[in-house]
Length: 109
Image (cartoon, rainbow, N blue to C red; front, side, top):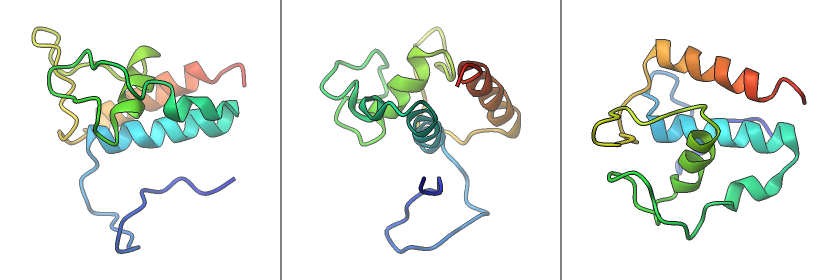
């Protein structure tokens, strides 16, 4: 199993950088894929239409966002507009809530 870290083009580690909702979705998708052994998760939604007005289907994090939102691990930030806000930072409280939902999702593995 490979460690789960964000891959930066310059191969640096920046612990003080803000983590966006898109980046967090990618990390959660990676955990789900590794723990469940379901490699198809990483491509499951490629080519699908986005249900979020601020998330195009051709973006590199689209599949990850779809994986975590369809499982109820993450959700739109604005239920009125349906926006996911992929570039918005993840707050500490939201990060912990997402981890708890991920734990519940993986309780049988």
